[in-house]
Amino acid sequence: MTQAGSLFASTFSLPALTLVIGGARSGKSGVAERLVTATGRARSYIATAQAFDDEMRSRIDRHRSDRGPAWHTIEAPRDVAGALAKVDPTGVVLLDCATLWLSNVMLAGEDVDRASLALVETLAGSPAPVVVVSNEVGWSIVPENALARQFRDAQGRLNQRLAARADLVVAVMAGLPLTLKGSLPAGWV
Image: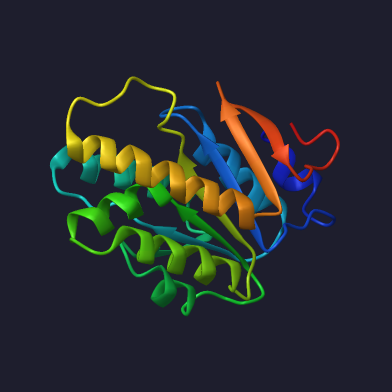
């Protein structure tokens, strides 16, 4: 799998919008990073995580270190449109992740449906191809409280909207990509 970046760098192109979806620790971010790297284009990373505690700061630092200096990172907990305005239009963008973005929107008290629709339109209109990482949260138990149920429902609707607009949708389980829509190059896995 690690050879994907060099194997397809000269021939692999991504559609305007790609969704990589999976559960927690499924390997979805790694698959998304390999897809972006495989294009051979300049890479921008739009990070939606916020470091509210030491553990999250450590996590963010580790991810940034793992990506290395070849990635242009833009911190954008909610303003994805502003972040996209800063990317190289000839490059490729990784938004990691839509789930944390949605959490940030909900915690800010924004209109979730309006913000979700605007996000999907913004991503679809990007001059550079965008790969979006998102969590599949609907395969778990029904949450015990109203806020958690609202989040689960909003995440499901956002994922459906992203998948409907995306030309490539890849589910990841146990680090293995499964193409749900579109196609990956033969032998990419």
